[in-house]
Length: 410
Ligand code: LLP
Image (cartoon, rainbow, N blue to C red; front, side, top):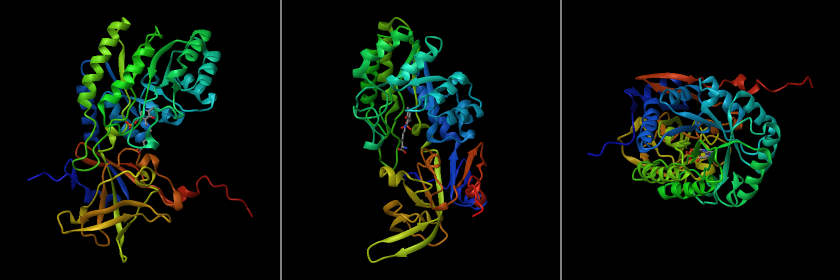
């Protein structure tokens, strides 16, 4: 008999007990899953000196970062705030890569003062950086390799019309600035998109890096970015990271021989580390029959999980309170005053008011993209670790909504 993909417990802790103890909506993370994903990547790239730079933006809770550190990975941060959160979690400046996109130079200076490596994302930033630091601070350059990759248009970021990186066609301009300021470029970076299924895409990006790299004598690493696709539903394929590891490592080793020195190979997974570790548990508020559809309205919405509305992302959902019961077809919708369909046309165990529903793949870009829209409170976060459920973020309370409002005497 096939094992159900829908857990009722994590590490022996029942999801129902977590829902009752901490209330809903609640994000729940399986710490062991995160560790095992890191181990899988280490194995897949065991032939090369690998650095895993977790893309913190996917899920930034300090406790998750601590787990990532404990498992031997480092981090990629995209804002000064992410850098500071990583430091709060115990990462040293040397373990943090800062990959900003179009930020004010003051923010870059702050990162440099903290001792963090900067990934230069534009010619203009290279010039400011060169004028300020010359060759005294090593840096990395983000190349846009002109590769169309990723699950959908919004998360494809390495193509010719993307705002990210410096076009590979501008390599000559890059080299002029490097020379002008005697910049010490120790890394080259690409990140072409998210939800990239095809292993060959990583090699394609690698080939762009290898070719550009021969112009930079001081390199210490090449950074292949993130983007490994995970499974969103039964039968849905995920990136074969072992194949990526095999083909990329082989090409990388050949490149290093040609380059004349052994470099480090960096990757920046976000979803791969945390997506499947996370669950969003909600409660059904209403079951609503209409002439054409049956809706389940839950105590959450696009304010907590924006991916379905923003990217048409598929998040599997099941009825924890009626896991083996007869199935019916529902649209699971949120309580936000917008069309916030979280799951469309899904067969799940018959739902009644008060049932707990669970959304899967909620670890990456779930809580980290949550908002207070409709003046709703953001959920609690719970980490299951060593067989125990730990509260790692309190549910917001009403006063949090007013905390930064300045109330005038009018
Ligand atoms: N490195 C860089 C420079 C990135 O910009 C990203 C993600 C990653 C690594 C990690 O990519 P991942 O392994 O998670 O695919 N909110 C969207 C995804 C946006 C990704 C932004 N950059 C979503 O929920 O699908």
